[in-house]
Image 1 (cartoon, rainbow, N blue to C red):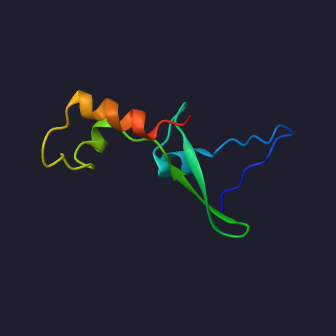
Image 2 (cartoon, rainbow, N blue to C red; image 1 turned 45 degrees about the horizontal axis):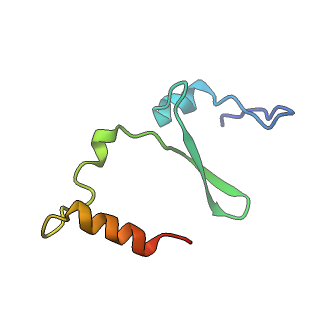
Amino acid sequence: MTTAVVTSKGQITIPKPVRDGLGVESGDRVEFVELERGVYTVVAATRDIRDLKGMIPKPAKPVSVENMNRAIRRHAVR
């Protein structure tokens, strides 16, 4: 079992085998996902922007800039 120590500032150093397993490096983000009370999993939250391509389907027909602006005005918080 790999362990880490929490500092007085609430920081930990992720052990190298865990960093390697997550595929994270300095500057990368990780998410702590609560599975149940007191039980968390750590997930690498870094993705290459190119991985997002295709996640949202193209609209059936193009949306004009005027229609986008109209929708923004309609839903703006006042």
